[in-house]
Amino acid sequence: MTYIVTDDCIKCKYTDCVEVCPVDCFYEGENMLVIHPDECIDCGVCEPECPAEAIKPDTEPGLDKWLQINTEYADKWPNLTVKRDPPADAAKFDGMEGKFERFFSSNPGEGD
Image (cartoon, rainbow, N blue to C red; front, side, top):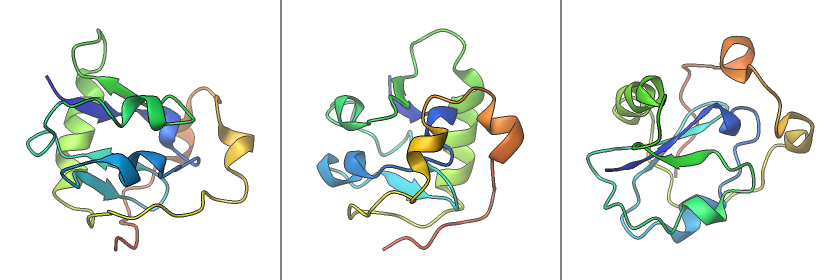
């Protein structure tokens, strides 16, 4: 098992999870984060820290797509190990449906 980030993170990009991760396995895209599944130690401390509830165990049904996305982009995006302020409009997108199709960006973020 590993933890993964889902589309609930897109355009919210809260980084509370990054601050508590003991192995620094979060990677930053332009408008979301992903977890590197091979680096995650399955401790689960990040899951309750996410205000958008975007972090899920990969054992939940229907998350195969998100496991693939986390795996692919963790290898392409820079590592993020410090908490940052969320985007100014994050609350507007929190809980919105269909964010992947509408807003996902494959562009990398800044990282550390």
